Image 1 (cartoon, one colour):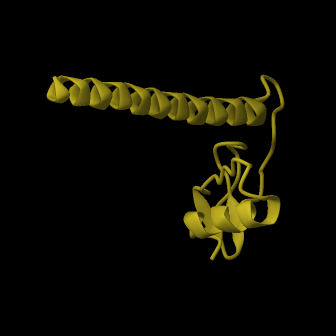
Image 2 (tube, helix red, strand yellow):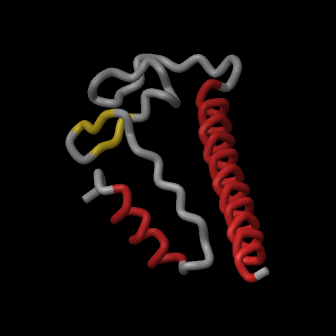
Image 3 (tube, helix red, strand yellow):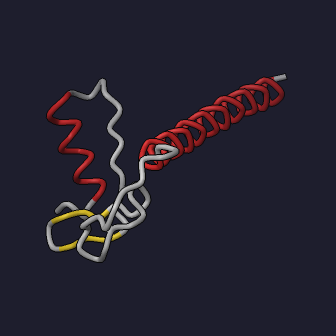
Length: 98
């Protein structure tokens, strides 16, 4: 069930209410029931255990910020496309009624 992202996001929304935005991040690898996020700590082995962690440059934080920035950019782009499409459809409708 944890690998079904759609179902997982539905569970999160059902717990917190439909007014929230639920962001479910797919793990690059699973070790049994445990998710392994290699993008956050690059030295993890196939079991998700970190070999070491060098905090210089805040690599885990930068990965999180980059991920969220990309998600927000995609959301804004999709919203813009929807608005342009709605304007186009309205103009088309106006032209057909003339």
